[in-house]
Amino acid sequence: MKTISVQLDSHRYGIDIGEGLLSGVGAACKAAALAGRAAVVSNPTVAPLYADLVTGSLQDAGFSPVMIEIPDGEEFKTSTTLNSIYDRLIEAGLDRRSFIVALGGGVVGDLAGFAAATFLRGIPFVQLPTTLLAQVDSSVGGKTGIDHPLGKNLIGAFYQPHLVLSDVSTLNTLSERHYLAGLAEVIKYGAVLDADLFALLETEVDGLLRRDPVLLGQVVARCCEIKAWVVEQDEREAGLRAVLNYGHTLGHAFEALSGYRDLVHGEAVAIGMVQAALLSRLEGYCSSDDVERIVSLIQRLGLPVTAPEVAQDDLVSALSRDKKNRSGTLQYICNRGIGSHAMHQFTPAQLAEACCKGR
Ligand SMILES: NC(=O)c1ccc[n+]([C@@H]2O[C@H](COP(=O)([O-])OP(=O)(O)OC[C@H]3O[C@@H](n4cnc5c(N)ncnc54)[C@H](O)[C@@H]3O)[C@@H](O)[C@H]2O)c1
Ligand SMILES: [Zn+2]
Image (cartoon, rainbow, N blue to C red; front, side):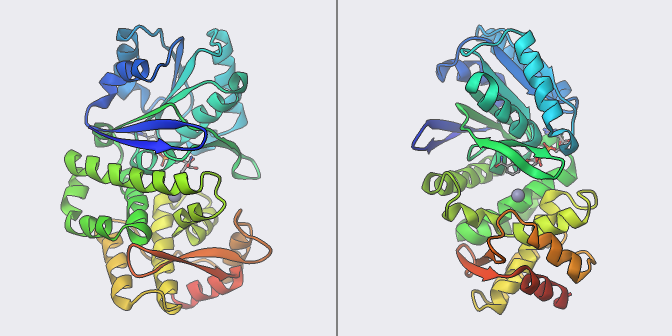
């Protein structure tokens, strides 16, 4: 097991990463000085696989956990589901000394985290991320929240967990599509923040596709270290944290234009990273060799590289709706070679044109 320590102004906590950690969650909660009632939030896909292990471990450590099941899917990351969590927390008699345990992917983590941030003005919470995306991205950094009918992730709070246990064994049951989508975020860290990680991914494609647990432990730990470092510099996303949007500006636009159906998030990010690499070369931040390495790694890891057929005007509109759009320009993250980054300003029209011309 490896522990990454996250040190923020307000709070310090650890992320434990390794195989078979779920069976030790009760002891870990005790060691983190948690007490009182525990509410385990999960969904009908993940709960049958891991909830017994988690509640059993909590019971063994002297907690009396209550299970809260929410429906599976991004379409349920809503105020209605959030309210149903509050209902159950109140019915089960949770008080300020209680805590919430999020068992699942990013949807469960974001929802349960926001419930913890707001219930009784904040009770502690523990993240047990079970998707690769949640282990390398959403469980680190303290963003919690829900979607609004008018847009994704519009309601939320920064709220740090007390403890994160990333059990890489849980990735064995993850669907191929969601596993590969998580790898897109892993590639992102390598491409703009860590050349050594990128080179490791290039040499370990087979192990990654086989989900080798030792390799995954190493890769998840490195990604958490990187994200924790970024978040420590910039907890509230005033500057450096924007680097994590690499591949996401166009990625979000493609995702929205696909109606959040044809492409899952990581696939859209993979395509966005290819476009980002091409634009980076165009602006002189990297070489054709660098572009080739990025495209080839994405492809070898089974992710898409070709932008979907979308009308240029639709792309401009989608980019103009980007939350990070400030008075008509987008802070666009380019890769500076491999493992480093540069910020470049583009208008939505410039980005859409470059993207559609390159097709
Ligand atoms: N808070 C943040 O900083 C942050 C960062 C990135 C993404 N997110 C959010 O994360 C969400 C996406 O997360 P995700 O990709 O984990 O999706 P998800 O939570 O929907 O999980 C994907 C699917 O895999 C299932 N699943 C989860 N773990 C499993 C396992 N071990 N075995 C079998 N099936 C399993 C889930 O039930 C779901 O059907 C989005 O809502 C996004 O906005 C948040
Ligand atoms: Zn992402």
